[in-house]
Amino acid sequence: MKHTSTLATLLALLASACSLVDDRVSAAIGAAARGPQAQEVRIAAVTDFEWEKMYLFGPYAPRAHICAVLGVEPRQCERVVPFESVDDGVMSLAFVSGTQVVRYVRHSRLNGDFTPELKRQPIPASEAVFQVVPSGTAQDGRPWIKLVLKEG
Image 1 (cartoon, rainbow, N blue to C red):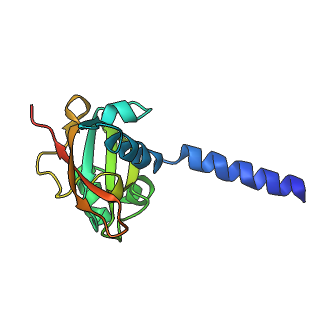
Image 2 (cartoon, one colour; image 1 turned 60 degrees about the vertical axis):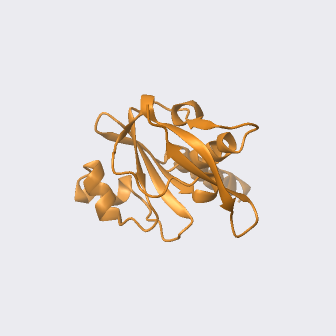
């Protein structure tokens, strides 16, 4: 019985490691944005995978819309975009290399608020630099931080 439990745990870990969804990216963005004297966040510096461009999708963005923007075929959509934001506090980030979505991230806006959704997308990795702008206090008392695309 113990062997079965260990095997199930290992399989669950492997499945999560192979998933396109990675909430750790959101935590890394939040840590960078809240760092001492943080003035900007370079998204490429907080990711540990290769990507060429990123897309930002606001809360409640429908899966069909996201797949259309990313150029994902409808029959592959649920696999590539496995969740939809159903909460004001959650948005989605998609990282693309070539024509492939390499990571799809559930991003807590408490880790840095990218809203409103940018009109100019995708954002090349070299230009994915966001200014850290303190913007009041969240409902739970933590500082609210806006992440504004740095123009340059």
